[in-house]
Image (cartoon, rainbow, N blue to C red; front, side, top):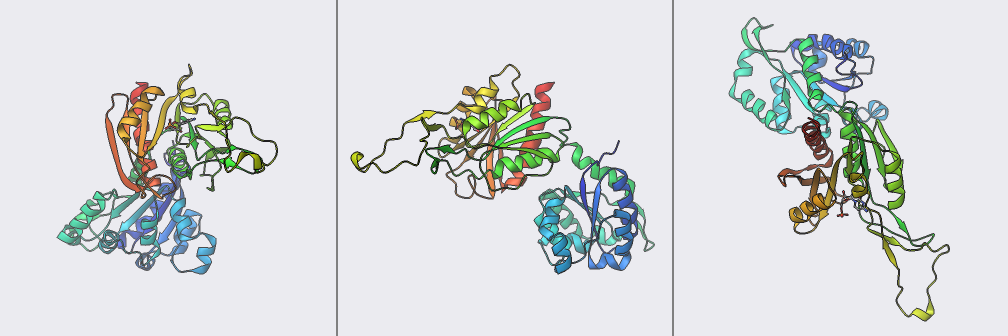
Length: 404
Ligand code: C5P
């Protein structure tokens, strides 16, 4: 089995003698099915040539942050987004220290800051350098930030010393890279995600809508697809690119959204992150409404309730594991818990849209997830992409329990 099938791995090569093992590592990653792009530091290039790694990876090697030709081909932000995993092997003591500091003076360190993908480092250095208090503190700091440490191993070293600091062997690193995905595996799980606002037409030129940007739903779709789920994303009008490996269906109104969701059933998991308009105009005027001189300054618009997409799907006999969102400005947990019960959900994600740093249209989010036992799990503020990954992980874990 290819444990890294279709996974995109950036292999960062730092300036240490263990860089000779990076060539073998590229081979092992590709044997596991990964698409590998190599990024080399200046130091890395002193130990192994880009040409070797280009030939082995089958992709151009990325060297400089400020190279216009390379940027035109695949910009550094694009490369950071492309990655499903950033693996730095070898990671020197200097490189680890620079990562701790958040330095971004070359392509590799910049990518680490810019990526939302998991990052792993395989330290490789002399045993005294590894044992030094500064390096040890740096290793702990990186782990605290969620960066994984692969190794190092003990043994004889290129400098003649014996001790901790050897880079793990290529085969083991490739297996560890594959393990990064295993814990999030949603292979074969059919996931339906609603996202964005809906637009409810008043007449041919006007409509009712809301501030939802769709960012959270798109981030969830991306994270779920990355974890192997078969994702259908039903979205209202938004200005967002379709995440890779996601089947996107564009809709306008709540009724369109319901119809598209019903047509996409059955599914195993439903995540309703769309901000669906609760009401729509009872009639859509066939022509642009004119100002009526007889009605003074006012205009009465008769609204009717829209169907509740989530509640409708969560009541079907083939009901999926159902996750709702509750965007509230007050009494967050209490209102969310009520919604969980009234809509017959398994989980509800509560977010405080009164906080200007999170929620609608912002880049970040923070939320609490409430389950049927009304137990609350908090997810502190971070980028929507990171929260999405954490939520997908959490949903996967609950889904497994639910199925057992
Ligand atoms: O009742 P409220 O709109 O606050 O509920 C929010 C949750 O219900 C969200 O998950 C939203 O996507 C879903 N919803 C829906 N259809 C509606 C209204 C809300 O799917 N008409």
